[in-house]
Image 1 (tube, rainbow, N blue to C red):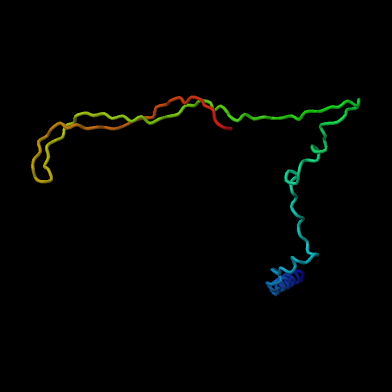
Image 2: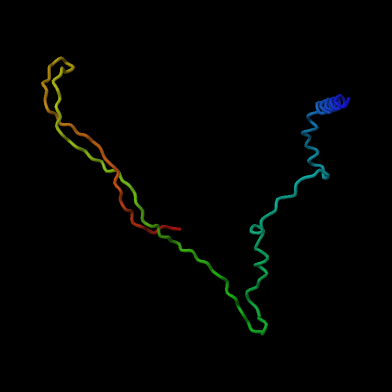
Length: 141
């Protein structure tokens, strides 16, 4: 009996959901309703609004408790305009070529002539990477 009631309630809810017009779900008029809930506007950071009130209200000039004029200087931080880039190891390709004579056996040329065997020069190219030190230098920070 309970299973039948639950099944009947589930079918009724499904039919009610299917019968709801699609325009009602995407109706933009509800967004213009002043009673419609909307999230609060995004907060603007104090840096964009102006100075920090904790810093702005602190006047650095004035009279101290004894009535004497005082001035507390601001702390000024200066960064260098140039920074030292330390030296480092790098690698460079160094090509090498070796030429030697090699035996070429006799053979027929494309035009049908016989070419006797002989020694001919042959160049073998290779190379390798060699490390080198790059001295330190100044760069803009």
